[in-house]
Length: 158
Image 1: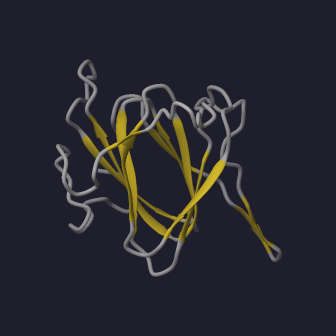
Image 2: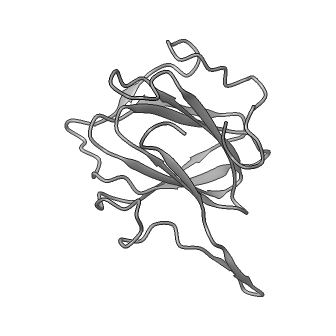
Image 3: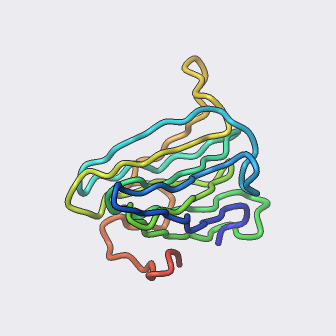
């Protein structure tokens, strides 16, 4: 895994009424601080990425659907510089994906219905000075092809 990133399978509690799972608690080892919580969706085949942040850490959780997250470490001083990780997620087996500053990331909806993804970043969105830096998903310096079959295993990353 890229230095500073992590993936944790979340415990799902199911009964005849539905399901419940905790995504991030303030007493979890991944918790740093609260910025905001937001939900984003993507239609089938859509890529949201690449982007990175200079300040905030992201805490993503796929709530519904199927998506492939990709992370790329371009940090000059990182011991995992140049490493690329994939994490395949399904809403039925939620995972917490932690992405620190300066790690490029994005996801692709690889299912047949809209995906619903929640993020709890450490910083609130600053409309005047967004901490968001984008690259085109297909034409960039990252050695990754969103259209190639995934190399991710059932365990969730490569």
